[in-house]
Amino acid sequence: MSLQRADEKLKSDVLIGVGLRHQHFTEALTTPSNIDFVEVHSENFFAQGGATQSVLAQASEKYAISLHSTAMGLGSAQGVPSHYLQKLKQLASTCNPILMSDHVCFSWSQLKGQQVHAGDLLPLAYSEQTLMVLAHNIDRVQQSLGRSLLVENLSAYIQYSHACMPETEFLVRLAELTGCKLLVDLNNIIVTANNINAAQPLDYAQQWLAEIPTTMVGEIHLAGFTEVTEGELIIDDHSQAVSSQGWQLYRSALERFGKVPTLVEWDNNLPSWQTLIAEADKARAIAEQVFDDNASSRIITPETTLESEFAHE
Amino acid sequence: MNNNDAKKHSLQAAFEQVAQQQQRLISAIFPSAGNDVIDEFDPRGMAIYRNNLLVTAQQALAISFPTVLTLIGEGLFNYASRELLILSPPKHGDWALWGDNFPTLLSGLVQLSDYPFVADIAQVDRLRQQSMRAKNSVIDQASLQLLATHDIDEIYIELTTSQLGMSSNYPVIEFWLSHQQRVVSDTAEELNQRFIKQSLDKLAQGDFSQKVLIYRPYFNAEIRELSVSEYAWLTLIKQGVSIGKALDIMTNNNKLEHDFDFAQWIGIALEQNLISRLKI
Image (tube, rainbow over all chains, first blue to last red; front, side, top):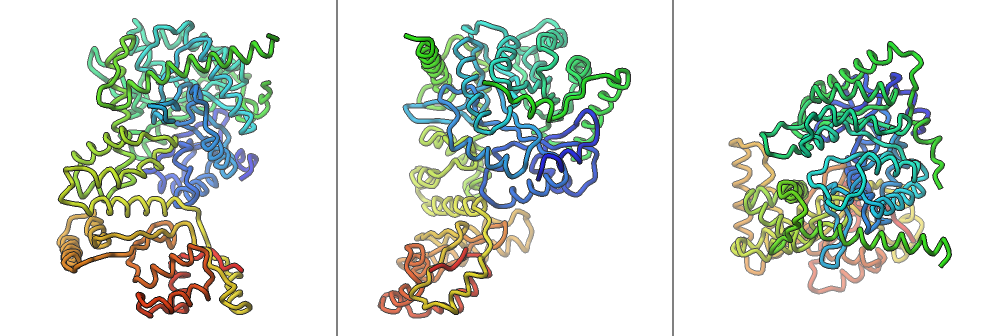
């Protein structure tokens, strides 16, 4: 599918999408909806053949596709293995995604002298050394894919004592070094704020957004989490509707970053497809409210955010 | 040292330092006889990472080995998942590819020493997953013309990558089929009982052996029994023996019943999507 054909399906200024999961395949492919794109987890479509390949082909006929990887482990000192990159590249060539993303984390390492994949998004220490490793790996991946990546902020459950810069500074420097854009996951900021016992989680999150340059954000993720009792850490389980704090923060993010493609993620305790679409409709309604009053807002499209800015060294 | 060398040295040093930090964290998360305790981290956070790993591993194996889960139950299945993380940690970045060593691990579990067939059932599950992920294949119809234009001694068969075979000393097909009824009903129960009775009848035979074919006509992988002669035939074809030569070898093998009919087989093979193409 060509990029041009994908764009013809995009329905509004602020591109609104949802995560497409296995349980929703049939409805997503057969029910009309006004969403602009669907995000799939790349690794779920790494098989050489079979039913998933067929689903992806059908989905890409109906929606623009965003490839969101969860296993690239961009911050791994072990590097991103060529066999992984090859599969990702192959997948991208078959579905022509409008966006490609992964996380600021590591996954590959060594265990008892053998290569291992953590199967999780493990946090990075925000240090000069880690920044060098991450930037080097992202550069290699972008060169291999021939396009720019979006990298997502993580919700971490541990903090490194030897971190030497705040998360936002780390991300901004990373984007400057590599030419990648940021995928700002608003839920992750809220989860982290709660887990580090920020006095006012929403204020913490607003400040976090204020520290990111306005041109650096290429996508926004929205999600919800399960509430916990005092003293417990919140797990970023994507199991609930977007929280009221999440919606407030979304409004602020649009006001600051412009018309950024937005995705609603819901991975566990999945609702019906219609409920998920209703969450996307809420996002669209907020975007319309924000930009109705600001006709001259910057419009961020996948081309302007990604393709034209692949100019890193 | 010039500027470029200094940069390279500094990058290498960064990689080495970060690699050590990351290996420490990985060692503390993966299950082992005794997890390292890293004091700098919140134990609640470490518990989340450890639990995430176990739960994800269990879910991944449950998708790849659904029949084993039904057979042995969640408790033992989850225990075996943890053991597999220790024995054979994931290394592909794709959970669907993890579990090649699960059948072997199951064969060594003392809890299953009275149920030695479970490991072979795991192998059936594994091959089915492998088949369902294999490259899609449609027969190259034009290549069938070779049968009309060339001697069969010169023609070779390329099989699809979605067809896979195995051999077992247990009636794994009947055992496997008896655990596929997801809906409990009288009919399903009757069907299960019939498969179980067939399994027991076959087990009662001395020196029982079953040859199994997993194949994928479309998206779903199917399973069927192979006769000894068809198993021998497929083995020869996979070894790269021509059609004519393979038929000669089978005719001259006194241990095989001479019941293999190539014309009949090719019809079935096309129907079951076993052949990718013929070639010379």
